[in-house]
Image 1 (cartoon, rainbow, N blue to C red):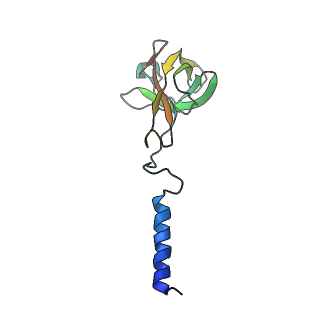
Image 2: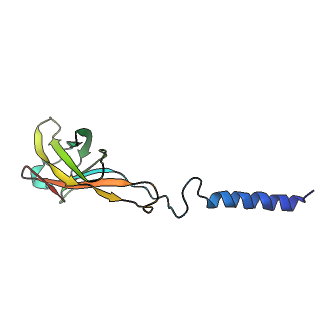
Image 3: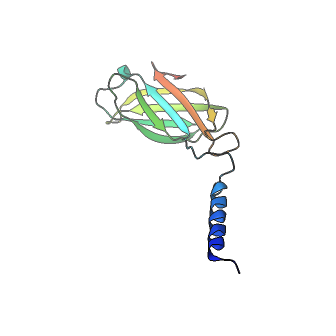
Length: 141
């Protein structure tokens, strides 16, 4: 029969050993997170003052909605969580004001940037595009 302190040490060692395994996280992986989707920039000149703008991003026909809020002395920016695959993606972006009036529109191809914040063998895999709408054109930013 083992003594009580020995049993306690065994339980502590087992708990520490399980913690070192990362609870399902492969060895060497951290737990950094990131989001996939599109960053859309709109020059301040193209946006009405003080308005919240509705943004629709369609990537290869899959669409998601987001919003742009004005920030003083800078471009307007929206982060839209649209699903993306590796490689190139066809984007169609529309921006409307609070009344539904079209403010900007752009269409074009962009290259998806893939990142592995926890290493190439670890999750998550994040896919992002960053584009600017200017003068009716969609350009990568």
